[in-house]
Length: 76
Image (cartoon, rainbow, N blue to C red; front, top):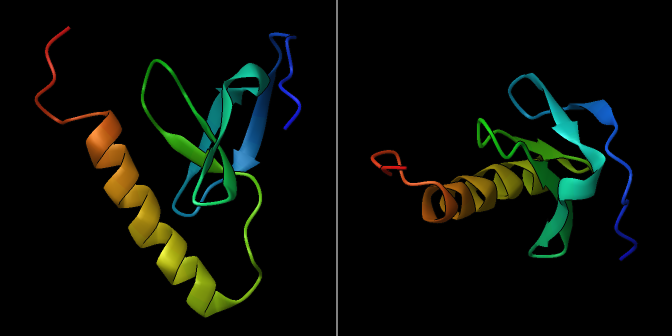
């Protein structure tokens, strides 16, 4: 995967809403390309299968991964 080193904001279509993310924060979960906003923890799904049933699976996988990466009661 090519990582973008430029710090440009880009708006990606999310499953539930729109957020602005940095192109240099791209990662993969279970073969899906997504980006996490480092400040808010919001996740933008960039590449996903077109099948509706696959999108349901993606929602579940992302919810599980987000919960592991950004616990709700995390103290900074």
